[in-house]
Image (tube, rainbow, N blue to C red; front, top):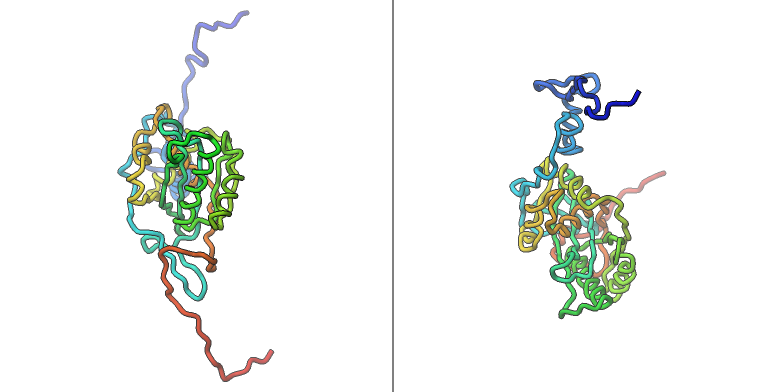
Length: 293
């Protein structure tokens, strides 16, 4: 007997949906108490939580990012030296790590953007998008090699200005040969930073959504005021999963957010420049007692 393909699959069946919360109460409290549910929501973000745990169909394109949820700050990265140890802070909050990502292209105006960004993370887990730079080759030089050298020099200045110990370079496409160029230029410039090659195997849209959804929902994304002078804010406002708007800056920041953060150095290193204060002095104390072992 042939199967009747004219009717939809499972026609006539009832659909059983049991969301993790109904009427404000957990439906499976032994497995998912309210505290665990709130922790899960904060970890995966509102969109994934609503889709997977509340069984609600979500149109991710309608869930564009809300610029009103960004928190802006104007302070610089402050470095203080105490007893030969460095302490980093932003807005009075201790910063413990940073992540820098360069998503390269040839940097031609009107084409794909070549963007580098740095995100600092404080000890509570808040993210500070401190700087974003869109790179272009200088003097209208469209030769690929010269464009790469020009951009590597701009990256070197970016790393120096923001006191960044390492940078991830997305090695897809032209990024395959750029790490070597960059290491050479950093050596010439005297910039002591590690270059880490990174291959992205996740689609750009998914990486952007996963990176921003959670920290925006938690209110943990802070953006420096100077980022307003770049195309990044416009990208943030216009982005949607199914749109074809520019998103190179968003992709760079998403890469920085998603990468394993690098712990900032605790000891002074030669050539340190920038805004920092000597908050303490090393001194010796004479003692008049002996210690027996």
